Length: 334
Image 1: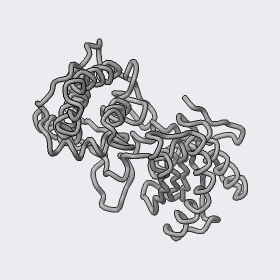
Image 2 (image 1 turned 90 degrees about the vertical axis):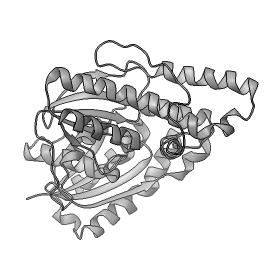
Image 3 (image 1 turned 45 degrees about the horizontal axis):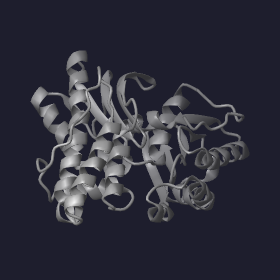
Image 4 (image 1 turned 90 degrees about the horizontal axis):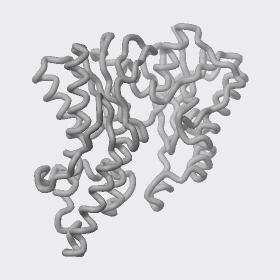
């Protein structure tokens, strides 16, 4: 029996969670609105906001979990990858908190945490993946197909060779001036449009790897040419553009994932990361699972974006192995 306090500060969300073994007791998140006016995360502003948010967020997590600080058995923290200034805030707080209580520190890889979020128990005893399973990780600047043989035995089968899927979606939203973050806006507008209205070529990449740089560029050039003919082209075709670019990106993701599943013979498949909240990706994976009779695992929306609960579950599995971190460990950006 263990109580894990988890800290997440890798980008622009300050989050703290408390887990009792693998069951979540609280998961508090403070988002940063300041970046919206810039159309993307400003690292310096993010780190300053983390400094303001970290103590109130941790306090709220402990209070809402009805856990006193002295009852904490270990402190798990995101060490990387992420924005270095943002990570330093969370890492420094975690070190100080753990040292004050004389409890172990557990370092967590942010990407592994996204994948392991499938093992968080929320109280409804929902099914969790059994090993081996394949997970499509689509988080921020990362897009990877992973084969998991154990909690920390993850083999990268394929990954993007340039830009990530989330970056391509956000870039498309920025080109159309839809605001930040662009992913949820494109997803919402796409439901009102025709996904076959426009066609954008996907690159030919060997194996299970991805490439999204060309998709962004072709979308930009396509709009540039259309705007010369009709300055209101985006306004007139906004929903169709969103539906078409989303179909291009998501179908490319699923095509490679399906190939990896068929080639390996694995029959359990999952998605994780911020883009796993995308409705077309979720629905497409469910349909693919039904077609092949695979077991499909899709995270709750609350565990798709950055949160400390996923850090806590990864920290819990490391705690069981007594895989503790030295207080001298620095954060890492990549």
